[in-house]
Structure formats: C-alpha cells, structure tokens
Image (cartoon, rainbow, N blue to C red):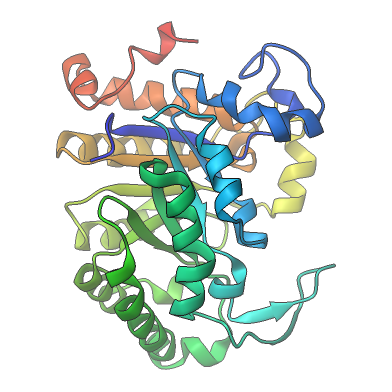
Length: 316
C-alpha cells in the first residue's frame, strides 16, 4: 500500500547537531528549517518524518504541497492533528496551563477541515498517517472507566472515517493509560483506526501496550518514540542538546520495538516509526540503531522483501 514497507524517520529536521549524520555541512537552524527536509529525505534510512508543528498550528494546503515537493514518492509524512481538535482543554501559550474547556475538542468537522483535507490535498499519497494525539484528559472524561471519553471518540470516528481517502492510516495516540483496554480496542477495530504505540513517560512501556496491538492485529504499525521514561521534554532537551550523539541508549525499548516491527513486516504490513531526539539523544542515530536491530531479527531475504534497505551497517 505504501511502497517499501519500512518507514523510519524523525520528529522534524531542523537540528544543527545533525551535521555529519544527516547534513553534509554545518547550517543554522533557520536554514535547516527551510531547506533541510530535502537532505533528510535523501538519507537511505530516513523514509518518514513526523510533522509535530501541525499540532500547534494547522498547516494549509500550500505548505503541505511545498513539503511534498521536497521528498521522493516513497517518503511518508506523519501528520499530527492540531491541538484545537485533540486537546480537551484550552491552555495558555506561556506554560501550557489549562485555562478552560475546549469547545472544539473532537469536532469532526474541524478535524476534516483543519487537518485531513489540507494534509491530503497537499501531500497526496505521501501522507502516510494522520495521528490524533489526545493530550492528557480532564478527570470528567476519564471517570467510570473512561466512558465519557470513549463516547466522545465513538461519535468522532463515526463522522470522520467516512471522509478518509483510501490508503491513509488514521491513528490515535493517548496520554492517559486509563484509556487502554478492550473497549477502546473494539472501537478502533470497528472504525478501522490504528492504535499509535506512543513511547512516552506518561504511558506504560511497550509491554504494557502490547494488548492493544494484539487486539488490532493484523495491520500496519504506527509508532512514535517520543521521550525517554523518567524525563520531561524540557529536561530531555536540555540534557541531550545538540542531539549529535546517543547519550542515553534505551536498549530494552529498542529490542522490544524491533521485535514488534519485525513481526509486522513478516506478516506483510507496513511499519511507520518516527523517533524524537528526546528518546535517546539523537533521532537519526536512534533510527540507525533501530534499523540495525530490526535487520538482526529478520533474515536478509525477509528484510529486502519487506522493502527494507541494505544492511544499515553498510549504508551509513
């Protein structure tokens, strides 16, 4: 469905510390923000990128079109739907504190108009996954086994999914472990929505999320490796900058994720995994290490039939 079935990538691309890893020279962040995507997409292992900035501000069709023109046909974008749709709370711009309930939360009309339509019209088949990452929910939506949240989601999927073009994965990523369980899994399966394996300090490790993946098996894997456990984004940013080396390798997560990816590829499905600098210290180096681990799990013939590259160790 997506061409080559490995789609490993990073969260954004504007990091000067990636010089010598992704970029041939040393460039300021402002230059990389405008021109770095083309260089990133030419890297043999980087076949995807997560457009996290779409979470903070809806992007228009022209912006998506300009991005699509910079990458090959085999490249796939992971687009985050805007917080205006996926956050139940309105927050102040300085510290992110909740100030009021969000009347646009899970509004399917807004989701289609602000996320799905501009992303698909601009990216076309290069739109791999549209992720609805639900910010931490207020208690009122999590009471009674998260029934209020699930009811809101049921209405949302019922109106959104008929508008989704064929070949595009819609995924939900959560920040509240209370949502994990058979009711959510049944709902996602009924509507054809993928569960995004979100590796984040607020969520259980992979082992604690495997039941969700099993309940939706078989199907494409969507994973965003966001943040090393035990850290917050700001502390991880300060600790790991300038993101030029692996400073805190998470070998256990990498091994388990490689097993999940390998099983997905062997079953004939795609694996789309994007990694943040704040996972281990340098997203592109995490991609290399993960690809090497997946290669070790797959026989070479399996890897190549899954659309994978030559051995990552020989393609640096």
